[in-house]
Amino acid sequence: MLDNTDLQILDELSKNSRISMKELGEKVHLTGPATSARVEKLEDSGIIVGYTIKINQVNLGFSIHAFITIITQNTNHQPYLSFIKTQEKYLINNYKISGDGCYLLECKFPSNERMNEFLEGLNEHANYKLSIIIDK
Image 1 (cartoon, helix red, strand yellow):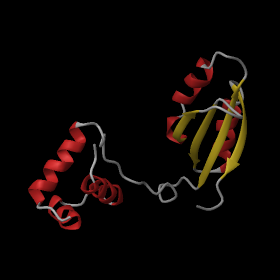
Image 2 (tube, helix red, strand yellow; image 1 turned 90 degrees about the vertical axis):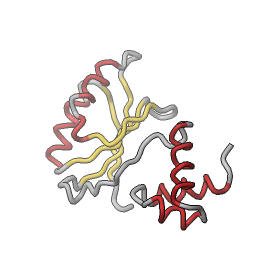
Image 3 (cartoon, rainbow, N blue to C red; image 1 turned 180 degrees about the vertical axis):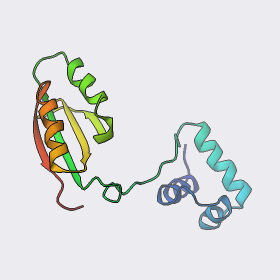
Image 4 (cartoon, one colour; image 1 turned 45 degrees about the vertical axis):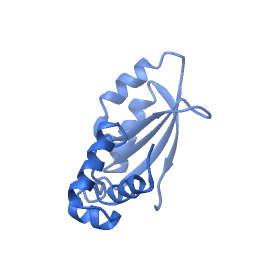
């Protein structure tokens, strides 16, 4: 069971996972070693499963951010999944969903031309509905 201090630690780590244990301890009113022990306990219990970074896709040259609702043409999704594995450079997330489609792809593309090539290949395996992100 998590207490308020554990929740504060998780909140601070989600804001900045590179924070030092000493600084994190100051924010949650613990010593550095006590904070480190708490974080290790959260990791060991599987609550913290990893640390990540946020990447600015636009600065990497991927100026188009899109969500694509996938509607597979039959119950065998393997052709679609195999195609997606060959396109990982464009994928941010591939969610299996319920509702209007079978999957929801979050993608990034460097240009409309690359996105169009991707969509043409995708259309051989599934139908889709495209939504392009205008602003966050």
